[in-house]
Image (cartoon, rainbow over all chains, first blue to last red; front, top):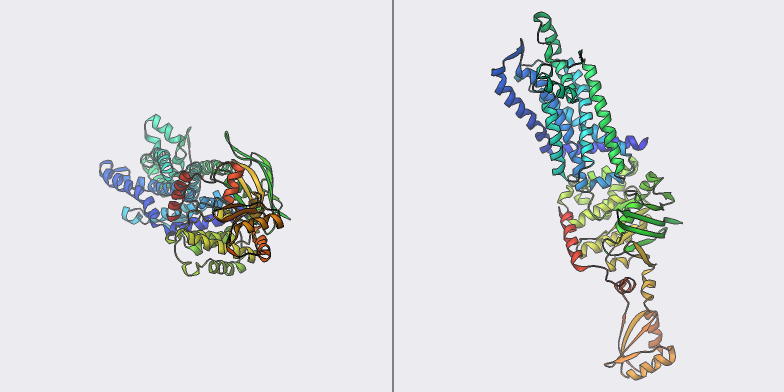
Length: 273
Length: 322
């Protein structure tokens, strides 16, 4: 037990230490979501107009972009595992009296802290985009982003446990992550697209992560609007077999996914002896 | 007490047998060396002993702890310096050592003192705030040595500790290793393919193709070839040869006025011979057979394939410089 906890904090500590040393990583995980926000947001906003009164396209994708920032940052945290293997440091870690589960969890927790921080930096854009933030929203956002980040870190570590080169890792992760992100409803409401796309999106677990965050941002307003006008409710709350997911149910989906990925990552690490 | 016990250890990688049913013990306080060419199974053995690799069959223990069943106790008892660097280049020397201390749960009250002591010993105290990537190959190896000892291990594993280093750095590293052994009462298990380095060991196992072909002290291994080679020149060579025959029953050869013969222990033999010799000696030369000679005799081939080795060395140098 002691080796589990020591493993967690030692590895998380180092993850943070390394992040501070390496400023390029800070910038790189913002670049992509920010680009999408600008291109899609500014580019399409005028054409698309309001999806429902009070919610324009930028406001619609903004929560998704925050989710995307956290996703990217989390998955790419696995890169440090590959890096450590390439440069030998992983051997120092593996030969220390630390439990393998502790190492994996520590990595994921370190990455969750970093990703949470990056998600929060994206919040700084809210005033510019005309999104109002309340303290309660920000507080509620924290556990959502942490669960999302831990789950996706699991994915990153799982892929990393099998990869020998950084290039290989990046290629594989990009092949996995981009379809997942594009089909997760960051850029469109999954309840209002052609059926095939709807099915694919609803199978994608990330959809529920994005939806949870979007419900947090837009849920209150939309409930009021739809009560008044009778439309707009399709924008949030993924409907599965006629059931509309609540934030809690969304989070459970992501958490289950995370648990599976994390177990697989630990198992994969054990397998390496 | 045996600090390391290896019994009928076998490790296969697919069809290839890297370690082929080897058995040996290492005594407490001993420097035990594995001498052999690249690919002989030295690193595989170390990896099994330090719990990084599972054996195919056989058993091994370190400080009485089984490397399969008591991994965590084994890990606490050992320090390691691998042949490839395992430092975090982006952190400073001090940060690397701190990480290690946390990972091994070194108590806070001894941590700083121990780090200071070891950095002083390997002469890196002044550079402790520098990022490791700015270090030379020799400095990195010294830092790894300090790190390997930070948690007071009883057994230190050195896998080719001076590979790819210049002669001066190599001598340095050895000075530290020998000093440390005195101070810390360490048992050292090392691998090498440098003959001169193997001379520092108390006992050597010569390993080739995964098998131990000989195991003894360096002196005894060399004695097994028939002792020292002595060449002497006297004013009267015939008389010298005659006296060797009469007093010691040693047959010698005279070539160009030089008398050459083999004797089990030339160093102690010569003073005795010189005291009793009536004529004047002009010169004496004693040559010890080298471990190269031993290896060649036991395996039928020289220890290193020169071409492969130099390429391998280049690769290592690059890794250390990076």
